[in-house]
Image (cartoon, rainbow, N blue to C red; front, side):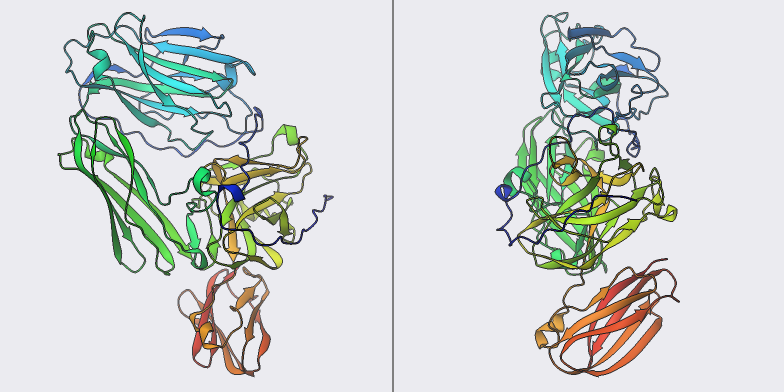
Length: 610
């Protein structure tokens, strides 16, 4: 296969500490409305709120007397039983997942909108008589909304009590991103004050305003009594990442390598969804660590006015240097008895690994294709990583979706904070056995010819790269990323060598060299032992550099603890040393190697791949 060779560029001098000024902001993926298919995000089940509904609209059959009012343009709301119209967009609008048997309301700007044309359209309810309802009311609804690139896209929910002459309304969606929203997302709005003027003559309005963006889907609209006491945990963050304030520092990783563990400032976004003020509002996070230990973090003790939303930090936390899974149980409490305890809790997790560094959630949910505007061109996807300690990058892992053609060549790449290419792995020809359907978790490891030095205080972009041609390559995605973290690269873009951020997380991981053993301080090693390549198929090498002559023994253990290989290497002198490891007869899987230097042991992982 012919391809353009990318020149390797020497590594630039280390930059200063990470902040917004040291990292170039990249734009969102530009407006390419027809970029090939993708798979809808994973379904999340709906749990409808309990309690009496004083008004209920499931849209099971049609719009049931709701009126469409167009303010700008000709785009209108409609009833659907199938979802958005068919497009070939890279980020199509998926159908709303609802709990009702069929049908919902939709404004389908992607399929029915006019390129470059602004549209304003409202869906207005019939008159609703709430004179027999209690004074404290909320409107609930299920939605799916996503924007493409219009920075001014807005959706509003409003109430009128005078036949539609005047409206009180609240902004519901703005600047939310192209994907990654819950489907459905359950929303509620306090309408008590608006209804009070004339509760027997109430109308609801759902207003959409955008310039050829995606769309908005609604279902299960209900008016219910607003609880007196209802605190909710809206979302939970494991770090205080904010690109505008911190640059790429403090990103939220799903897997941390041992060498990159750092303090994690966690916080919960809390909202008072009740009618009364809530006092003594606190959040408690219990971190369950590998081995059974628990760490309890606390924050809050605040008073929340009705409708108030505040981000509440918990006490700081730094994971111990223990490999394994960490689970988080988050609970919100207040002095009052909460009437809706189901929205007071959430769970989260992350991992600590010896060498793997990741943003993704581990199982394929969707994929990214190059669009027809870039047919045949090179493109790549990846994620940014920020260093808190010096390290060496030895490989890139990537998951590939089964839309990809076997035999296609890909490679791994590493860029510095200025998007300058530092190094590229050897090419890899994709095998059919390496492809993933939704739910899959098979990764390909792409090895560099030599480890790449990475320096603390810098951010790097790790990417998987396709060299262009007639083949189709679908890079798998899993989970969501904040803006400026996950990147798509089109080096042949007519407007220049452009990098764009996306919000679906590419399943592209960094593989670092193993950490330095604690006994290095005793003067035995000049650097950490390294097994390379890793994963290995037939042979690999264990390399290490001695500071003095010592007696050396090598051992390899299966995950069961069985010793499968051992070799007494004798007394070796100071300097660079290597031991060849043959793995051709070993079964595929993970193994643990041990380097014994006169009783001082250094350990690491070795993956055998077939």
